[in-house]
Length: 208
Image (cartoon, rainbow, N blue to C red; front, side):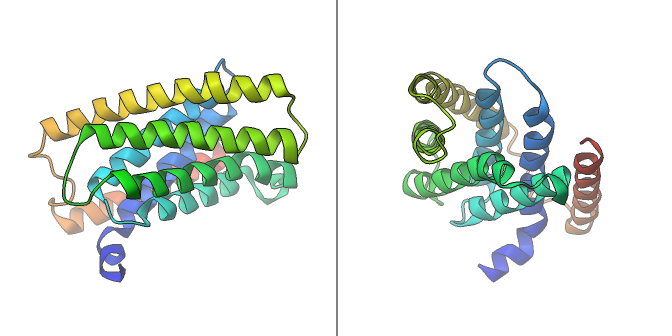
């Protein structure tokens, strides 16, 4: 695991930063089916990361970085109990769900689109259900109607959208196999990734 992290830590930070930026930018936009859009993008990024780096535990590392990105972008003064129990907690649940079901369905040495579909679908339904129950019966901030809508409407839409877009993106990636991000010049890649990561964190910090 240490050797794996030493080789790929910049990519892990990049994916975490992209998910964190999604949470910061898209998360701050008021739109219909906001949670569907937000979580679909996150699940697609997690699927791509899992394709390139199928090592168990990678998803959780990416999510932890994304949470730190979100907290950094919000600022310490905004990190109230309500903030932490909503945004970062939802993101953590999504990461835990994808890690568990990805470890079950996605094998390191074989590829099947159906495995990514199963991972996205089950993760969406389970995580949306857990979060809705928490909001309704633990925090008492939602009513039953909102719980039902969140699970059966938004959860189902996220399952369909995330699996469809994940398959589409993975199909594109596999169609251009000659462009292998892990085999380019390591010094060039490291420098480029470092610059992109710094730019993303600055963008996240100053966009709020």
